[in-house]
Length: 216
Length: 216
DNA sequence: AAATGTGAAAGTCTTCACAGCA
DNA sequence: TGCTGTGAAGACTTTCACATTT
Image (cartoon, each protein chain N blue to C red):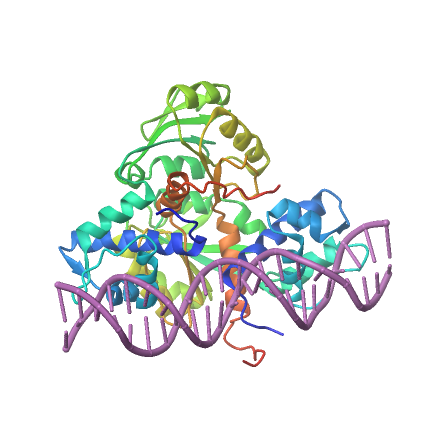
């Protein structure tokens, strides 16, 4: 039942999942593709097609059972278990991430931070112990860390990626504003604030609501 | 010359731009589509096609002039000027963003932060003055803020988006883990750490592992 | 020789529209 | 009736391969 599913479908499914959790809290029991579409910015056909990639779990004439669909999506995403995470680089962004309570609530256990600063090593930041970078391999192995978050300065990011990969993580989330490479068997995603802002500027400049554009 | 260009093309172009800046610092004068492809994880044909959307600015047989291509991309993205930005919600993530020096270096002037906390109002965080939320409209107007960054708790995000839009920003970057809506003439992008982590889990859980982006 | 720029082909994703079910 | 599930059509994106230029 697992097939290659597109980047954009994965993102939409994540958004639906977030919406479903809200709906559940609001006490909704059923939701239609139309409602999910309205709240997520997709079309209703898109929503149905996205779900149909994994089977049919709606009820014709009613919609989808919020609770059941949540569980199905969590299964598909591998979120019905906890994930062990570490953070490399406990600077401003790193520390902010450690203080982001939602991580734990959403199933991610941040078990260690790593840094080179003597002041930080041995301390706890928002409850997470900070270790010397040298300890990375040992701790990733012993704590069976599966995901590494990189929040180092850009010049240290590739080394962090290399060491995390070699130590055995399966996935890397990179916050440093550089492209890093990882072995083919490690999954990678990058989040870059400046890059997003620049993409936003493109929208403001082009779609910039004042340029005449090439015809249809 | 402006046409609708896809989400994914915009992202790739942003990545090329970031690479070009690195190449310029490394003193490279020419770069081939093959090299940009290797460092960005795209294919060389993809790189050439992406650039050809805006005209032809390479030199056959040599490649692209790094400096010239940088300037062209910056023009396309509207980055040859400074942008005025404000931040709503000076919590952990918000404060970390204010301390992120790259913003200013990359042409974004964060002119104000807004918060509801009495302690923060009137203070400066990393040099940026923090105002009461009530002041938002006044300051966005007088300082001609063009982009608003939302870093509030999720339940306050929609109000922030509404007020920013009404006050006249052209773009919103949302860090709150919730979908917000904005008027059609406002551009919107959302960054959500948990959502990215969940997408990463999908990759780790589904069999077809290999989302490895090549590159610098 | 080396690398761009680009039509055309191949591939992917989205939308449409409606059959089918509760 | 209302809404899902889905083939088929349409739109868009990527890849291919080669003529063209330096």
